[in-house]
Length: 501
Image (cartoon, one colour):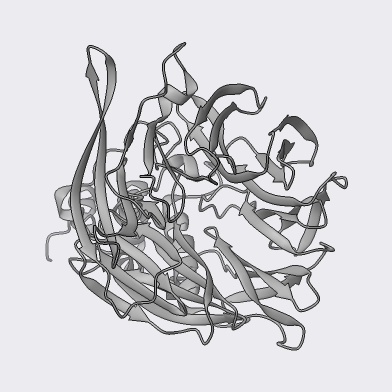
């Protein structure tokens, strides 16, 4: 009789197997089945495949690591396949009596499969209301009372379950996401040109820019004024907060004034008679910018080159250095390239990872490295793209970091990361879904499928798109000047083996 492996030896051998092999091993006999279900085996598989996977993202006592792995694999399979009715259910959600100007998820972007998963979005409209919607059910959860003026922008704080809106007169309000009750308000002297929600480790705050070029920092949720800084006098200002909420990029489009970068702490704790810590980048005629989501302070800026003839994209690394006078901002340019002359000036720009830039030019989606290598170009839409959304499943970068999980053994090192997607919306009344293939040196973007809207007889196209880990929501503009939401919720059978690679 051949010698039998002991439980510890069998567990060691199984630690080298992939999920599909473990499922097969479980069919051999009772002992193999028991060992293949060991918690640590499936925990390591989860950590190997999804870097953001944490025990806190599971409801302990109702879900094992194996169940989590199978459920999340199934979800990713269905999101990549996109078969109508089989993989997702589409719903039209109406309620606003005007056009929807902005939407944002208030539910957290966690992957959970305990039967309590729920996607909730909030919207603001020209009908002067803010509303919350249950995406899976396709129903309205609450609506605010009619406001004094049309609401034009909103941001959300999913961890705090708070929604912030601003109307066309500059009135800012905080709402409780659970019931729509007003919490606090703050009135700007003029119209707001930008809102940025920052869930900073030292406390959440709100950044607001006005059309007069003033930057306001407000506490959350009380909306108390922390600082007021003149950035670009009499010029509408745009804002971008870095992934770790330590830096704020401020710019005014197509201006001879160079964009500025502020050190966040100095905006929150102003010293009397001292301006906040900032620096001006040595570029001008800025048109677009984005942060690299996998880096704490890597900024990509689109601008005109020195002779103002061509568009260029320059990438900078930012840092703070303590000096005798205080804090100095250190800026290092690490890459720059010119966009092709034949390319229509891009109107949308997003970063992915630490090395990649996504640009939308008309109806085309183009992928570049920060050194200027064009990796892909997609012409999937028949009309201009109106919205670009880059999805990455994991906790927001601004949240206080938890202690790191123990590292996986060397033999479990893998190229797999959290599944991320790219979504585009277009006036052709369709959304396009792309996913990343990360087996190569640079991630390769794969075009997967269209999500179709309603009838062209009634609708004029999609104007916005956003997504969380379980659903996709687009704003569908109607020909009569109103808007509806169209949701696409992915079906789950809670851990089908057929979806495991």
